[in-house]
Image (cartoon, rainbow over all chains, first blue to last red; front, side, top):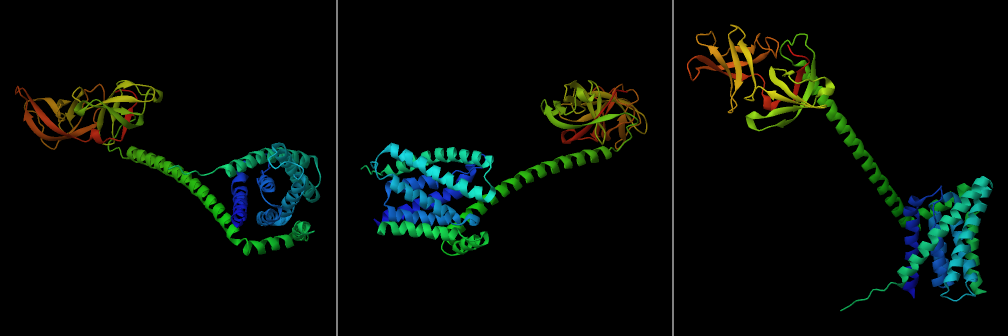
Length: 163
Length: 250
């Protein structure tokens, strides 16, 4: 059991490094995609709530230390996404693909709405922000789908030794 | 109740971390970055520094390559200029084009020089070619950007030459062994080893008095009708880098 938690943390670290080091290269119209959203959705569907929330909080804070001006924001947003999704997934079957897709959409919408609110308060709610938020939503959604199903695929891989 | 406590606590902690001024948030982030998250943030910093250094190295290599190329061009230009200034004889008022030897055609003593100047620079078939030390040959074919020069070391080349001090006339010829001679010298002519040989006033190719070489030794021709003088040419055709193509013939 402890190995599962450690693996959860390691996966979070990998996502953090990818987010900080690789994803800036995929910037589009000033929007850097966030793969931590897909990682949170993956945890919601594959891990228990308590350990998952702790790891999400730690990785969120870790990511926030790279953006000190908004320290705590990512931890809070990722926590909110996780908590809402844990409630959202309850009525669905654990293998429901549609539910997973819906949770990915919901997670991205929450992330973008919170981002829009924070940026709006700091820089003002202009039309440009709306356009950027919409681009961000679409781009993040696309990346999230890819990353989420990639994680699922990797998780199902098994090493088989053939004599 | 237990299930609600942890999420609530984490959300509250997150909100508390966000609250306050930007300076306060930066301070908190810095504190965590220097303690709990130090290994992770330090590794990120190392990755970024490494990546930036790699980019810088690539940029510097490009810059170095460009500088080396520029340096090389400047050196070539300097060498060309030095060769130009180093012409050891008076070429008169004849204009010339400086060319660089860029290749050879033919083999051994029958080879010709390929020079990087052609009809685009006004080079014509038959133009005489000299070096900073003496005569080289004449242009035998011209393309737009280059030309082929028949050097005096090729047996096909021959021009009238004369002794600079006594004006004794002869014909400059080279054989397949690479020896350059002044042939057809009249028996009893006043010529001796060490004399300087220059282009003759009878030459239709070169103006009179262009240096050719010095007499190394005198011998009789095979038919004993003439004297033959073996020459040491001033110009080493095989070592030429730059040549001057005279514009227009004599």
